[in-house]
Image (cartoon, rainbow, N blue to C red; front, side, top):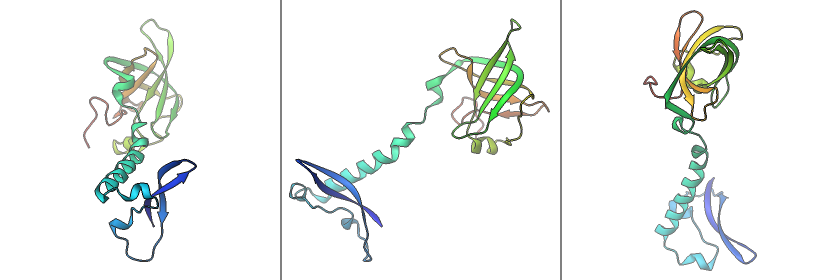
Length: 178
């Protein structure tokens, strides 16, 4: 099966759409694009191929562009360190989340949310899903949110047993190279 670019009429409108193409014969590149409309028959193959490639790239990149970057949410100059008790650890895609009740300099207990890397990325850096559980004592370093809320991108997480693991994204400043 291949996708073919086909000209279709919808009332007084003409549109190019992708449709499945099934054929037992050998599929050649020039068979991927065909024209069922007189308006499009005069387009040369190179222009039509360029249009098809552009449409395919648009479709492929739509999901990628929805994912945010580190710099969009976190301030590289706002370093924070929180020591406290784990209240929850969510091992979910696209990013894991760590919630900690930490004590501020004034002695007030405040809840912090730390966005971490993807579960797959964390595993490649030595993490296990069971490394953190409710009630564990931790120390988390990271970059604070630009909006000033108690949200941060985790960098170094010091576990109760003394191990230090990197918890950020691949794009987090200071991320270890693979």
